[in-house]
Image (cartoon, rainbow, N blue to C red):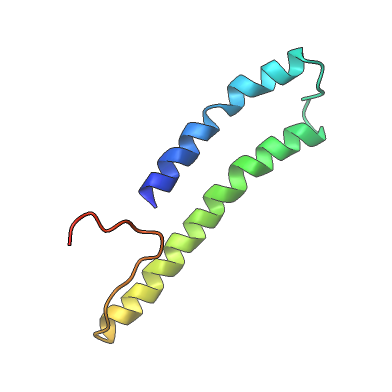
Length: 81
């Protein structure tokens, strides 16, 4: 999940660069326009979904650990075995 968050934050840094470029190209990027709302919702929704998914995985794996079952994290890369 950390790799996903790093990639997401890198893409989020591109938003302040792209909005002025779109404005210079003639696209309406004022507050309340559909393009502006797309950037705002497109930037905030993935971080919320990733947060909820991490919380869910934490609760599920805590319950699995209490039941002496193996812990599994979805979307993980096993670097060390």
